[in-house]
Length: 190
Image 1 (cartoon, rainbow, N blue to C red):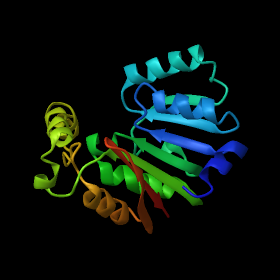
Image 2: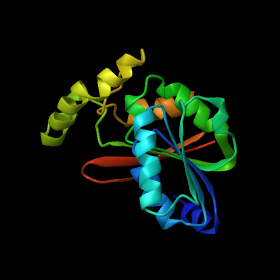
Image 3: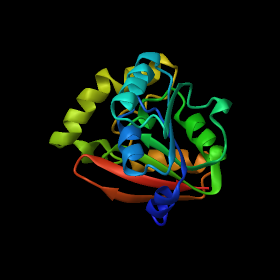
């Protein structure tokens, strides 16, 4: 993502939405000590674990973990980077979370969306990893979204669905930046 590493090295404000235990937040905070990281999740025990981990990793000076919904206005609106690490497809309101991310970014900000690698068509996902992802999604991702009356995107949402949500949320740029055999990284910009 063009210019992002430099921005983080100098000092940026980052929101890690759906941070869970804060592992992704911790990795970023250790890698970019001049930046300030905010880990947000609506699950209190996860945030408590993230706070304990921040103390253990000695990153409490540039991290803050808060229990809050991904669409809560108290998150703020001046972020250089907003991340969703393997969580957007689990959310009860992924569109609302992306809309809020878009309005919470600075005009030159970036939204990074990391999702399981999936094709848009079911038949294109019928490989070993696709089968595993569908199985896990059936017992974790889909029920989590349904518990919040969400759309149940699941871990095999595919690029088209994520792209459509990003554009519907108001982002004007969406692109795939990289992928591995397991994940795909998307960039969305205002």
